[in-house]
Amino acid sequence: MTERLGVFGGTFDPPHNGHVAVAVNARHQLGLGRVLLVVANEPWQKTALREVSPVADRLALARAAVEAIAGLEVSTLEIDRGGPSYTADTLAALRRGPDPPELFLVLGWDAAAGLPTWERAEEVRRATTVAVVRRPGQPASALPSGWRWAHV
Image (cartoon, rainbow, N blue to C red; front, side):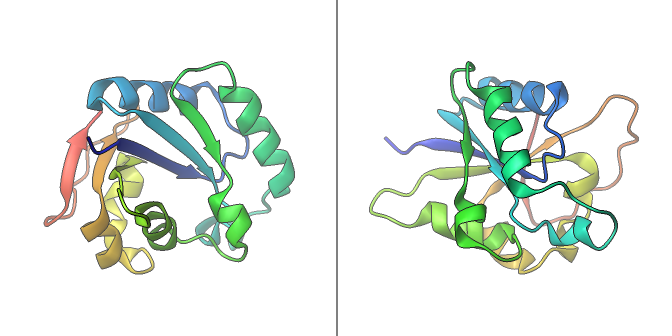
Protein backbone atom coordinates (compact mmCIF):
# COMPACT_ATOMS: atom_id res chain seq x y z
CA MET A 1 0.00 0.00 0.00
CA THR A 2 1.37 3.41 -0.99
CA GLU A 3 2.08 5.81 1.85
CA ARG A 4 0.10 9.04 1.89
CA LEU A 5 2.62 11.69 2.96
CA GLY A 6 1.99 15.31 3.87
CA VAL A 7 4.71 17.82 3.02
CA PHE A 8 4.45 21.02 5.02
CA GLY A 9 7.35 23.24 4.09
CA GLY A 10 8.17 26.57 5.57
CA THR A 11 10.55 28.98 7.14
CA PHE A 12 9.17 28.15 10.60
CA ASP A 13 10.55 31.41 12.00
CA PRO A 14 9.38 30.57 14.57
CA PRO A 15 7.20 27.47 14.45
CA HIS A 16 4.01 28.03 16.43
CA ASN A 17 0.78 26.36 17.53
CA GLY A 18 -0.89 27.27 14.24
CA HIS A 19 1.70 25.24 12.32
CA VAL A 20 1.17 22.26 14.60
CA ALA A 21 -2.64 22.51 14.37
CA VAL A 22 -2.49 22.64 10.56
CA ALA A 23 -0.20 19.60 10.38
CA VAL A 24 -2.31 17.54 12.81
CA ASN A 25 -5.58 18.48 11.09
CA ALA A 26 -4.19 17.75 7.61
CA ARG A 27 -2.93 14.37 8.78
CA HIS A 28 -6.27 13.32 10.22
CA GLN A 29 -8.60 14.85 7.62
CA LEU A 30 -6.67 13.46 4.65
CA GLY A 31 -5.72 10.10 6.18
CA LEU A 32 -1.99 10.77 5.92
CA GLY A 33 0.46 8.37 7.49
CA ARG A 34 2.86 11.20 8.31
CA VAL A 35 3.29 14.93 7.84
CA LEU A 36 6.82 16.21 7.34
CA LEU A 37 7.58 19.72 8.49
CA VAL A 38 10.29 20.58 5.96
CA VAL A 39 12.43 23.40 7.32
CA ALA A 40 13.62 25.64 4.48
CA ASN A 41 17.35 26.11 4.23
CA GLU A 42 17.21 29.40 2.31
CA PRO A 43 13.57 30.47 1.88
CA TRP A 44 14.12 32.47 -1.31
CA GLN A 45 10.69 34.11 -1.20
CA LYS A 46 11.35 35.53 2.27
CA THR A 47 15.08 36.33 2.46
CA ALA A 48 14.67 39.22 0.00
CA LEU A 49 11.96 40.74 2.22
CA ARG A 50 13.32 40.33 5.74
CA GLU A 51 16.03 38.81 7.87
CA VAL A 52 15.49 35.14 8.64
CA SER A 53 16.72 33.44 11.83
CA PRO A 54 19.61 30.97 11.50
CA VAL A 55 18.51 27.61 10.13
CA ALA A 56 19.92 25.70 13.14
CA ASP A 57 17.65 27.71 15.46
CA ARG A 58 14.57 27.22 13.28
CA LEU A 59 15.29 23.48 13.04
CA ALA A 60 15.69 23.08 16.81
CA LEU A 61 12.43 24.95 17.48
CA ALA A 62 10.54 22.90 14.87
CA ARG A 63 11.80 19.66 16.44
CA ALA A 64 10.74 20.81 19.90
CA ALA A 65 7.29 21.78 18.59
CA VAL A 66 6.43 18.31 17.22
CA GLU A 67 8.60 15.86 19.16
CA ALA A 68 5.72 14.38 21.18
CA ILE A 69 3.07 14.40 18.42
CA ALA A 70 2.42 11.12 16.63
CA GLY A 71 2.66 11.29 12.86
CA LEU A 72 4.49 14.62 12.71
CA GLU A 73 8.19 14.67 11.83
CA VAL A 74 10.73 17.35 11.03
CA SER A 75 12.66 16.89 7.80
CA THR A 76 16.14 18.28 7.11
CA LEU A 77 15.93 17.43 3.41
CA GLU A 78 16.24 21.06 2.26
CA ILE A 79 18.89 21.89 4.83
CA ASP A 80 20.97 18.86 3.82
CA ARG A 81 20.68 19.81 0.14
CA GLY A 82 21.89 23.36 0.86
CA GLY A 83 21.27 26.52 -1.14
CA PRO A 84 17.87 27.97 -1.92
CA SER A 85 14.86 25.81 -1.03
CA TYR A 86 12.62 24.91 -3.96
CA THR A 87 9.55 22.75 -3.45
CA ALA A 88 10.03 21.05 -6.84
CA ASP A 89 13.41 19.69 -5.64
CA THR A 90 11.95 18.52 -2.34
CA LEU A 91 9.02 16.71 -3.94
CA ALA A 92 11.33 15.06 -6.49
CA ALA A 93 13.61 13.82 -3.70
CA LEU A 94 10.66 12.39 -1.75
CA ARG A 95 9.39 10.54 -4.84
CA ARG A 96 12.71 8.76 -5.48
CA GLY A 97 12.89 5.09 -4.66
CA PRO A 98 11.04 1.91 -5.51
CA ASP A 99 7.75 2.79 -3.74
CA PRO A 100 7.22 6.57 -3.91
CA PRO A 101 4.56 8.02 -1.60
CA GLU A 102 1.43 9.87 -2.68
CA LEU A 103 2.32 13.46 -1.82
CA PHE A 104 0.06 16.14 -0.33
CA LEU A 105 1.58 19.61 -0.23
CA VAL A 106 0.12 21.47 2.77
CA LEU A 107 -0.25 25.20 2.09
CA GLY A 108 -2.16 28.20 3.31
CA TRP A 109 -4.76 29.59 0.91
CA ASP A 110 -2.61 32.67 0.20
CA ALA A 111 0.41 30.56 -0.80
CA ALA A 112 -1.78 28.22 -2.85
CA ALA A 113 -3.21 31.14 -4.84
CA GLY A 114 0.36 32.07 -5.84
CA LEU A 115 1.50 28.60 -6.92
CA PRO A 116 1.86 29.50 -10.62
CA THR A 117 4.63 31.98 -9.65
CA TRP A 118 6.74 29.32 -7.94
CA GLU A 119 10.02 28.06 -9.33
CA ARG A 120 9.23 25.09 -11.64
CA ALA A 121 5.52 25.27 -10.77
CA GLU A 122 4.59 22.71 -13.42
CA GLU A 123 6.77 20.07 -11.72
CA VAL A 124 5.09 20.83 -8.40
CA ARG A 125 1.63 20.59 -10.00
CA ARG A 126 2.35 17.15 -11.48
CA ALA A 127 3.93 15.76 -8.30
CA THR A 128 1.33 16.51 -5.66
CA THR A 129 -2.17 17.21 -4.46
CA VAL A 130 -2.32 20.58 -2.73
CA ALA A 131 -3.91 20.41 0.72
CA VAL A 132 -5.05 23.99 1.10
CA VAL A 133 -5.79 25.52 4.49
CA ARG A 134 -7.79 28.70 4.94
CA ARG A 135 -6.72 30.80 7.90
CA PRO A 136 -9.44 32.27 10.14
CA GLY A 137 -10.58 35.65 8.81
CA GLN A 138 -8.71 35.21 5.54
CA PRO A 139 -10.74 35.97 2.42
CA ALA A 140 -10.94 33.14 -0.09
CA SER A 141 -9.18 34.12 -3.29
CA ALA A 142 -9.43 32.13 -6.50
CA LEU A 143 -7.21 29.08 -6.65
CA PRO A 144 -5.36 28.29 -9.89
CA SER A 145 -7.05 25.83 -12.22
CA GLY A 146 -5.42 22.60 -13.30
CA TRP A 147 -4.16 21.60 -9.84
CA ARG A 148 -5.42 18.73 -7.64
CA TRP A 149 -6.94 20.24 -4.49
CA ALA A 150 -7.91 18.91 -1.08
CA HIS A 151 -9.31 21.28 1.55
CA VAL A 152 -8.31 21.15 5.20
